[in-house]
Length: 452
Image (tube, rainbow, N blue to C red; front, side):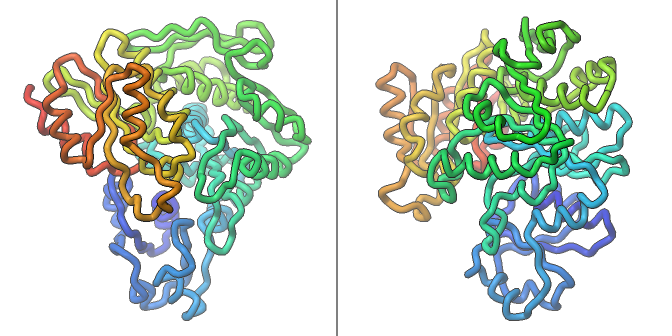
């Protein structure tokens, strides 16, 4: 919603917004664009009446502004409808979908197209550091859009990505997530099947062939498909991956034959997979390997995706958006591989609608093996989750301890911060994972660490 607001302002519209709780980096991003945001939801925010209201999917029909919107009979659109109307018209839409990796893959593709002089438009769920903003109108023929399977709005319960008229679709993974709106994995698969079905016959589906569910579902595609991954059954493969201090070095194969070798700033198996998807798309668009190699090397990453927040007293603090158990596991493994000679402290806040539910209780116990010390606080906003469905941080810490991992539970962020400051020592890497603001833990930790 923040990036759409920025894009519409670039179009010349006067923009205001409302949010219950806005936090960095998006709060700072909106401030930089001089877009005012009202705190909380009140009917008077719609007075005087705007020409159009765009309704985000966190807004329920009982929301005071939604009720006033109905009473005033003002024109309104959902986020995906607005994006299609204001940004996708006349463009070839490149939709990046999947349970994991959408943001990094979208950022990689946008950077590849930018370096190739294609002036892409894009809308991305995080802020790519190469652009320092997560949207761009672009004058070129392509628009890169992160395609979310979450529901569209209270008046449209279908997934967002069905609104984006895909020409090329990248499918990174299919797992059960968003337990607040999906019943089970089969329900999730239904949405992705609908996406595959609307790719035109002259389009392209680039799919992660290492994902068993993805491999099964892409058989229904009417268009050409290309698979990528690490196993030999994929068209595009990464081999001889070597993680070094500054870069990761990889050889890229297509159909078993070497296409190129390159160095990149991204690391971790999941991110190498994302890179493969972006490279496959780049070659489909006939971008020369020389440009793709340079783009891969100069890609700076995405805010809140293994982002270095700072280092003080020899202690390195990283921030990551990981919240699904698979993302937590792969992120922790990636950081372990990158900083294999340093002690790794992993801090995880169960904050998302799914992670605050016990649907993943057992799986989280298998997600932290690569860390040396695990710290878990009490989840926030638990009053919104039915008692029988609630996740237990205490239980997770107990399960981790039974598996031989050093793990600690904390009632709140303040106690967690105090323990981190006491425990951290020079040489440590502290990986903080949350899909929320986490009470600004990252910066507060750096401020409290003693050292230069």
